Image 1 (cartoon, helix red, strand yellow):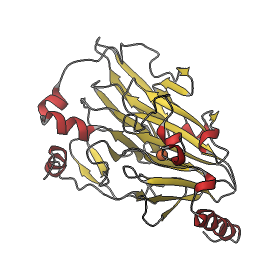
Image 2 (tube, protein in one colour):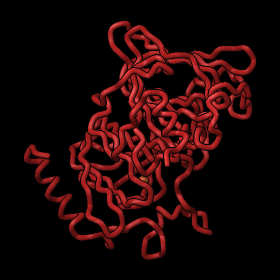
Image 3 (cartoon, rainbow, N blue to C red):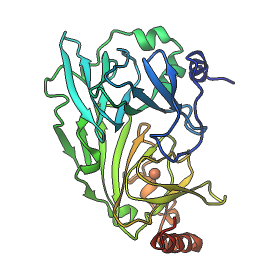
Image 4 (cartoon, rainbow, N blue to C red):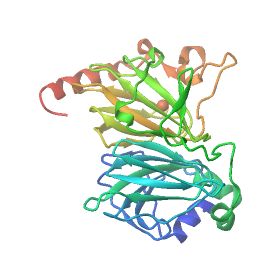
Length: 337
Ligand SMILES: [Fe+2]
């Protein structure tokens, strides 16, 4: 049965691109989307269509998108270009901030906002992850989702420094509203997932959706794990590949480089491999918190499958995982892929 969200896509004249992988987000073909005032593509793979979606929206040189407000959350990563966003608070003030390639921010829930391209010669390309599917499927009312006047002041109270890039660190979670460049953002050691990894968890604009930045070392790969749907993983630096598989099924390989996207399906194991000569870094834009926690507060995706969790420790993995990595590294060293 067609969901209210998929019916809405059809009514907007959009065809969602399905699949778990895009080799190059800068090359995804776009189509006009009158509502947003730009050219866009919707990525909504078959296993996350009731949680979140991913939009690529281009702003013409010197142009701007339509002003809008909506009752779904919107995280924005700048794939290319530079520009500015204006956001209205509920007190009659407008907040403006500038962004460029590598910036990450979120529009506060239901705040009227507008994105501008600050370059007169080049288009800007934004990647947005929203929870529009769950919101549209729940309310089934465009008038409400796009026309509600409530301001969520517990998330955005008009603080003039809201988009300054300041934040607060809670454990390994950075709560902020704007990061100038996620490619250069400082990370914290994260040995639990292996691979010589570091990461930081992100909460933007008080959202229920979450994000994280991860990096792992040259000559390493991370441990396989699984969790719920809706993690959109954008490769920022490095080259390598990921394996994704449903338990008991064949391992599928997806090669990546900066600008690639992978979206692990709900409950599928996935595992990331660095075959390059520099650390590999990615940004994951997720739906809510898709992890399950044990009674001790440990994410199940960090707990060994031997203990009932959802992470495969190195010593438990299929031997062909290591064999494939060794041959991929050898091929990369020879100049192949
Ligand atoms: Fe994951």
